Amino acid sequence: MALLLGALLPRSTARHVVSAPIVLTGVGALVGLLPLPFSLDPVDHRTVLTHLTELCVIVALTGVGLALDRPLTRARETWRRWGATWRLLLLAMPLTIGATALFGWWVAGLAPAAALLLASALAPTDPVLAADIQVEGPTTSDPDEDLEVHDEEDEVRFALTSEAGLNDGLAFPFVYAAILLASKGAVQEWGLRWVSYELITRTVLGVAAGVAVGWLLAKVAFRAPRRIRAAHLGDPIIIIAAPMVSYGVGEMVRGWGFVAAFVCALTMRAADRGHAYHEHMHEVVERLEQLLTLVVLLLLGAALTRGLLSGLTLGGALVGVALVFVIRPLTAWLALGRSRSPTSSSTATSAPRSASSPPSSACAASARSSTWPTPPGRRRSPRSASCGRSSRSPSCCRSWCTG
Image (cartoon, rainbow, N blue to C red; front, side, top):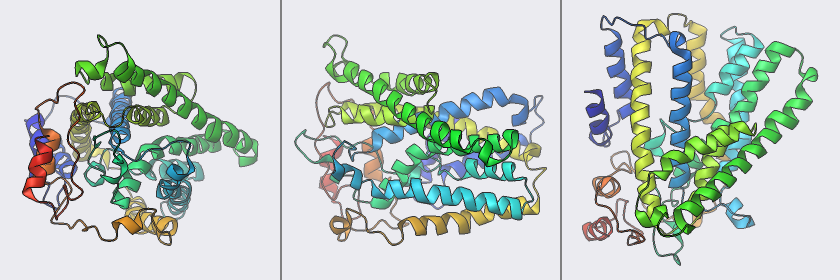
């Protein structure tokens, strides 16, 4: 019943304020009220839940990397078009960590190390739960067409998607800072090593591992002999191996595995950007992400009604409220409020998305969830500039959905 609910909820709640994760958590809370003969306390199953949530996040990061059409190369222009992402990562996230840690120490009465650990865990935006407000997926077209104009016309969605792909890995150095603060004491005892190794070296190693694995898998997918070329065979199962291999290699070389998983997907996306195989891979990883998210949210909801919040204090609740309604909006405004997006001139005349017109409209949903395969090597017809937006016409949607 839970699997059926997870399959139907995303479409049935697409035009309503209530999101599928909220409903799934509520269903899990009802399950937790049942007289179950086993424990649902996360502390009792910490090893299993650690690996389950790791798997869920790296699969989500892979889907995010594949969904981004905007390239990131050595050219300065491509880095400038990611400007909002860098401001969110380098300005908004550290400010959020600092403000939340201060609030946790001052209001909730946490020790400095515990306050920093809490802030580091809460500061990154979640690539799993933020799926409904991210870009819709990879756009494939003719190889000589500028692909980055399709789903990047909404700068806010692109910034949230790309930042969610990197912030999980980049928040880990601050988690380690909290551990070092608790175990080694004063910052001058470990600060220099933390900056040089945890913050810089391990991030570079994670990026390098992701590029190497992504380059190798892209070769297998698009450049290998035809008898084993995954894109020619039309089998997108390689994308299930990608997050596991990239995360594992990233951890083996002592880099940040989450960074490696996202960079691996970006590297694969950069190979033959117009090939329909990217859409097939994204669809597979998206279904796997939905299944893992379903399990995690059901377990979370069940734990909520079986004592997970028994230790919550008023100060702790105030920290959560302040983070959502004060700290995060304020830090995002400081990072982005006075900036102009690089695509602002091209998006000024585009029709904005309203609350009643979510991105996953009926046409876009049917196009993305279609089970009709595209013949190997064949590219779908490009989406019209208005398809997926309020001004699209039925003929436009039909022409794209049917390829």
